[in-house]
Length: 255
Ligand code: ZN
Ligand code: FE
Image (cartoon, rainbow, N blue to C red; front, side, top):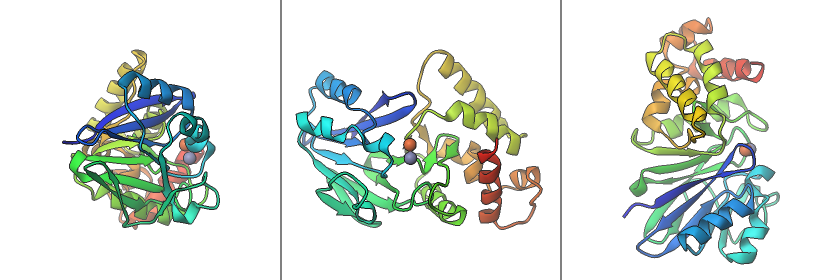
């Protein structure tokens, strides 16, 4: 049975996720921006936390951990490469490692770029990938530590997952991302439709996360650096996709 996944809004625009395996009653928390909404969701569902999966070291993804662990002792899993700047880990993992939540196996993927050492967790049987600030809804994380080439490589690996994979990313940035996306992919009808859908959802106070990889492939400009129309829009027809990606990322930084 696939994981049951809850999206939990935290702080002003962060998301945490609870992933519950009904067969074993194990529950994983992915990222910990803030304890209170997470503890409330656990109580509401009557779930006992078994694991915490950390995607990267930024405070808005880790700072609620101690308060959560005080009420729910759990195994904390994060990147070995970041062990020196993450909260204390019980299990340190690297690209290619597996994590088990009850009956479900998650594959650890190094998706460096936003930070070096950022990881994603892909649960193929649940058609879910937790990407935090790597691949985001209609966007990707800002390059605080890694290079554009590194982020392009990370996004390319995520883009190669099955198209029906649901993408659980770390922030509600989608509307702002859409305003930028149309400037580099102006004639994309799927993007135009998505931008309208996002506006409607936000008016109703609804989350635009998660999304699907299929939708990201069709509309997210950061995955579309090889598309002739996107290349034309940034004046780089025929250029290496990694370089087109770098240009798009640079334009977003100053948008
Ligand atoms: Zn971050
Ligand atoms: Fe973040």
